Each structure stands twice: as structure tokens, then as C-alpha cells.
Length: 272
Image 1: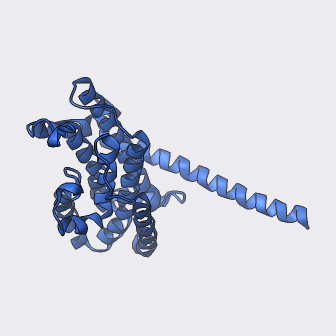
Image 2 (image 1 turned 180 degrees about the vertical axis):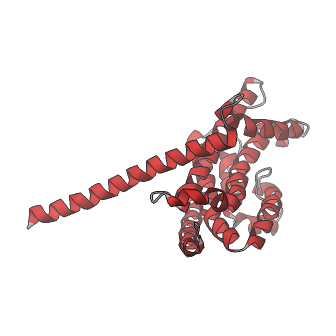
Image 3 (image 1 turned 30 degrees about the horizontal axis):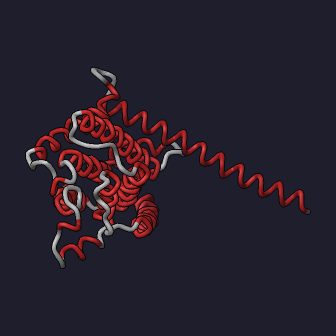
């Protein structure tokens, strides 16, 4: 009996590996399709995915350069603003584009291996990777110009960007489902994103905020991700207002809600 059981277990594991391999290829193909659809091959082609966020972030960084020599002289405001704006762009782009994901890519669902989950994940990975590359190049530029220093805690920095990408992706699933079921929901998505921007923590530290507002904002996973990011960027910042485990719990809960929402909306998607 033992060899039979072993064979079944091996077969199940092999099927699981094959499933992951198929999904990896599907997501890779969706990313390439998204790149081609959005940027094409004219001019600098796919490089726009990095240049575009760089241009926007550089403009925001230039505006904050007028803020002076940094908060209490411990860090320069330009790399602080670049980090906050670029990472918020991941949140804004992933959530904002999820509203139209289903309508824009509905014909792809004719392919049995393509799911709505794959479409949203491909977009989130693309936005996260492009914005991370743009941010690293910009921070290297500020270092070369004498306006900043190397990233103080690189692993924490990567962790903050990954958590933001995961958080935005998880939230994009219920947003996509709700927007498809009710067009009115889609009307509120962009205003809410822009309202969230000034209170997200991208451009301030919670230590600067008086109570009781600091206590209220510290419950927000978005603010905690930015506290983690700012701590990773500067040696002088050691925020005690973030807990990676708390952020992961939020991401897991939102992922579960997102998967359930996609399951609810799928029967309402008519391909003909």
C-alpha cells in the first residue's frame, strides 16, 4: 500500500507544480500584453513604464526641494518626498486601474487558463516593479547630486514596497468586483484615492502628528507601510509606529475578501 500512497502524493504535488507553472506563464503573457497595449513599441517603447513615474515623481520632488534643508536638518526633503510619492503611486495605479480591468480585458476570459485574479495580479506586479525601478533610479540620482544618502535599510525598504504592492493588489480585487456590479462604485474610486493621499503618511511621519490624530492614523495599514518605508530610507528615522505583522494580517484579510468578491462577481460576467 505504501508505494500507491506515495505515487498519489507525488501525483498531487506534481499537478500542483504544473498548475503554478501554467499560472506563471499566463501572468507573464498578461504582463507583456499590458506593456504592449499601454506603451507600444514606438519611441522608447517599454521604457515608458519607468520613465513615466520618474517624470511625475521628479516634479513632486522638485516642489518639495523648496522645503529647505530637511526636517530639523536630519534628512533632505527630496528623497523623502520621492519615496512617499512613488510608493503611493503603486497604491493609486493598482487600485485606479482595477476599476476598468474586467471591462477592458473581458475577451481574455474566453481562454480557460486566464482568470480575473491573473489579470489583477499581472497589473499589480507590473506597477510594483516599474515604480520600484523608477524610485531606485531617482534615489540614486539624489545621492549623486548630494541631496541624499544610500538607503539605510535595504531589506526593510524592499519589504515596504512589497507590502504596498500586496496591500494594493488585495484591495483591488473587491474594488474591481464592486465596480463591475455597480457603476456608481467606480465613480468614488478616484476621489477616495486622492483624499487618501495627504493622510496616507507618504509626506509626513506619525511622530510629527499631534494626538489624538496620531493614534487614529497609526491604525491605518497604509500609514504603517509609509512609516516602514521612511524608516528604511533614512538612518536618522526609527519609527515605532509600524508593525510588519499587523500589515501582513491586513493583507491576508483583504486577500481573502478579494478572492471571495471575485467568486461572487464571476457568475455575473457574461462573455457574449
